[in-house]
Image 1: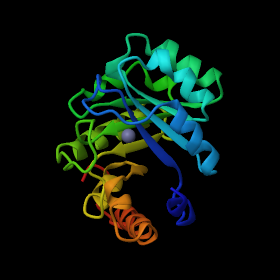
Image 2: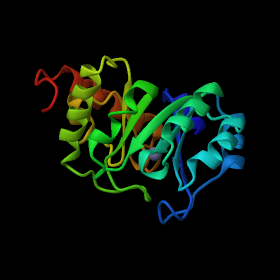
Image 3: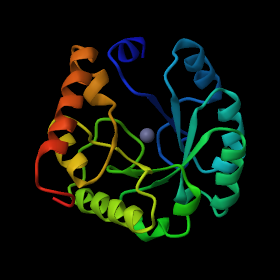
Image 4: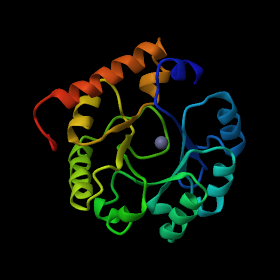
Length: 210
Ligand code: ZN
């Protein structure tokens, strides 16, 4: 993480998995608290857990700058979004790859960012699902239509040098990369190359939705 910070990463994204919402188990609030003490970048906490309402406050107390929860995991997202924002953290909603984009309809006025999973959640190093490019473009167009052009549209899963240009071209402006950074021989080089690939996507004159 220190190497990523030194190399100019914009934020640290922490995937919290509970063994219920996804098959894998990762870390809890104690580790987030330790991460908070170890770096000064914003800490995005992505809750891949069945009870985000119950645990979000603990992660905020541990130092999360933003809390991202799955629309599939709560029946009361408005209450959860309000509580997160009242605590001073940013609130983001996440959709699994096969959850229709229309799920965002009522949520968009109340969120600070939207995260689209571009692989099924649960494990690192998975292959990007190609139909997700069109979904990203649809969601970006929808945010524009709803007057929320300023919202970050973030993607998580299968982000690497070959997918990054098209992800940005489709309308994503925040890329979460795990394996592409942390399994590279040089974290600094991997971040620089990924950033260059994303910028290449911005320059290619194909417009959104390509
Ligand atoms: Zn994540």
